[in-house]
Length: 286
Image (tube, rainbow, N blue to C red; front, side):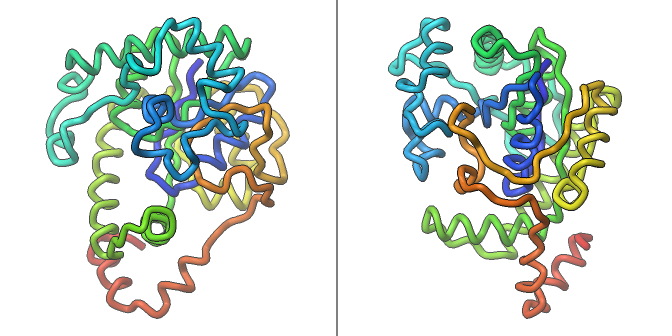
């Protein structure tokens, strides 16, 4: 089975993946849509020097190098692992077939299917946790990959996401995004996510909230397990990615051992921003 997480960036998907990784039946692999970037060492992943969570480059990592050797691919000819959409506005209007059936996306999906197969073989686990987050990629994997796919939709307050994105983009990439611009983009992306989720059968998806995950982890985990027919296990008290886990991308400080708790620091920052709070209400974000 593939557990595919759909969410916005900075929603807590790394925390969710880490919690689910504590099951003896799962293997977390991070954001597989970015595997191409990590192999080619371009674009996203540069803040981590495109390293696996074990600390090695993927070509030197025991897990990933074994998987890639079985796939018989080289760095120079490594195929894309990211589904290409049509853009936010077009995706809102077109059906999933307009994306999933495109030739270059079919080639990507074929490779992803082979990749999942080798990960299953190498890990000897029953469940792969793919935290790629992208809704278009999620529905294409759900629709086209030969394995059963379950979707976990992780929600978080868009104001929190906006504040976190602006902070991290400035800190890690030196990019200066305004809160108003970022909130608008996040709202549009939320429309696209909801449209894509409509293509998923209710029996194959579950919606959870970041706040519930962080404040009542056990109850939220039971909801996930009950909804997706997974065996329950005791959740961890701390978030920590061990060296024997080989996951890519995710939050930059994922290797720091931290107690699981709800982060609502953004609320204090917003108290001194009356115009931003008003704009949030106009966008129906509360």
